Length: 416
Image: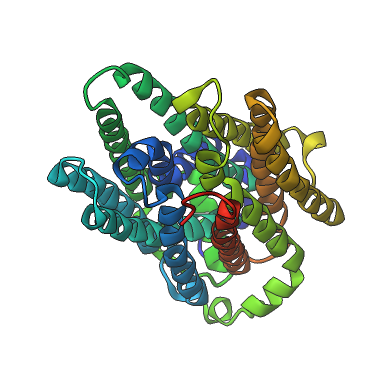
């Protein structure tokens, strides 16, 4: 490579903190549309009361996400990261806007037709999610840990923002005619704007940040073809030699075998998370003093503590990096299953709020600890591949958890 990156220290490069902020916003954009859909669940339960929207929509979303990430991960080394992420963010923008168009066209009426239309749009969400999350986590894995932590932190910020706005809009429109629908439409409009902002940031700002260019030049020197388009946008021509192109890298199978504990841990974290959130919170927690606000408050609390958990590892002595320790922590988290069962059946809302706080914190904390610890001591192309493999296990765990979530309906009247 013509660039003198080998003589530079990443810590001294300008733009690190700006890159962290942009990464956080891009993280928000990768989940804000889906979180918006979760937080307007009370509106969809009013329009489609017999169709279990919180369970069905996520069960539509995840198979498309899983199928897409499997395909993209298999061909990861040949796919331009820039094209992949741009397509993902554009697809998020368009599909979120289509939810508004569909609702306006049907005038907020229920029925199987509009519900099928929503399910089709949610399938697009799943495709966009895998394009963006796998692409971004793979790309950021070959950079410094602070950037991938900021991106994953953005996932939690998306939840906090959507929950806060939902509580505000519910309070503002609660007594007005068709208030739930008005709040939901405002919500989706804000999400559409955020997605469009992410398109602009990723297209014109992110690839030109010095620290991002540094790591991409380094990855290119190690044989990565996925960063070429982004380097070209930044005005840098990748000068790969034959030796660079012939650099041997570990196969996906070898990478997975060396990191199988990280992969399985992420799978188990999201099996549990999606078996509880959102279906259990909407349909299995009963009626309490908060009434119609109850599920929204629980989701807001969960999102807030998820955010706290994702930033807790910034305190070095709080970060868990020991591989055996991570396994123990992930398995211990399954004690929350009987805790949720007995709390929903016998406890009051105070105990449930405390429990959901632990649940949210542990989800964010373990996710960040695993993702920032795993991609080490590999070349850029290998880190990118490993990032994509880990996203497969996150998505697979989420899909399995959403399927297991239906078991909470056993014994309930009108369960199906």
